[in-house]
Image (tube, rainbow, N blue to C red; front, top):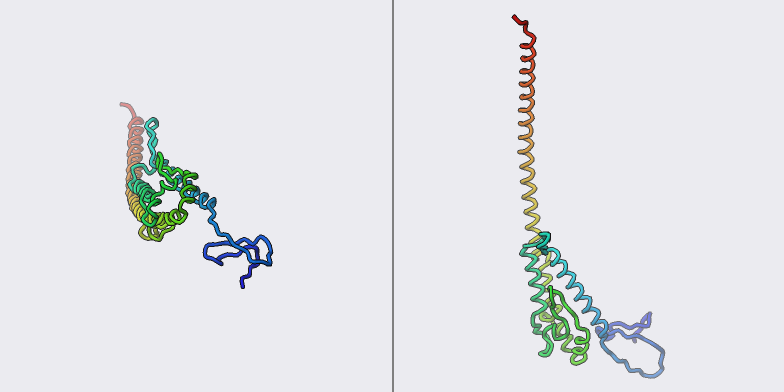
Length: 224
């Protein structure tokens, strides 16, 4: 016997949610269908987030030839590596998918200008209607689907121990520490030099004062 405190039954069949609409004394037929609208919304959200990252990268590495304004990360090889890996992951053939749908452009996701993605919703719906299983495999296949490939790619960038960005952060932190140590050393040298100069100026002032006293004494000597 199955019971629920609400009009919704979950996980009776893995991944399926059943909405109970009314009471019936007779046997009922349950029709199961995929929520294509939800898939479309998820893909659109992914495309927007991907484009946000690429826009941020473009802003960080930009160069304005008129004002000669440079982005803070211009020339940084790590940023270019991140962009290349993202582009490669999006453009690859996904071996876990069927022969008709093994690349994202075949379901309406393409790389356009300035490394941005575009999403053709109509093309995705056509592909899904034609072969929902193959389209699902394109995104969900273990190890070789879009989800698995992108997860591996982003893990390689952000892993807290040996991710590309983590290693870059560690390198920058080490450089910062070295620079701070150098600044401390320079401050010690500057303090010592300032002390020497101050002592020299005090001695010079005293010498000048002695000369001025001697001049005054000479000026007050009686004339012959």
